[in-house]
Amino acid sequence: MKSNKLLKLTLGVFFALPVTLFIGNGLVASHLSDRVEYELLNEDLIACGGGGGNSPAAKKAKAARKAKVKLTVKKKKLAEAAAAGQPTADLQAEIDALEALLEKN
Image: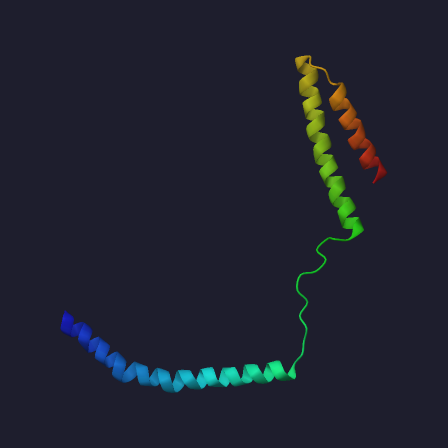
C-alpha cells in the first residue's frame, strides 16, 4: 500500500509539477499582464449601491403599507376587546389616527 502511494507521489512530482509550472505560470502571467493593461487603459467607474427606494414617493408608500398593516392589527384587537367586554376607547383612537394618516397619503 505504501509503495502504491509512493509511486503516485513520484509520478506527480515528475510529471504534474513541471507541467503545472510551465502551463500554469504562463496563464497567470498572461492574465496578470492583461489585467494590468486593462486597469491602466480603462477608467470606468462602477456605481455601487443606488437609491433603492429612497425617494420621497417610495418612503410615503412604505409608510402607507405599514399603516395599513397596523390598522388591520388594531381592528382585530378592537374586535377581540369588544367581544371580551373590555374598554375600546384607546384602540378606537389609534384606529382613527391610522385612518387619518392613510387618507392624508
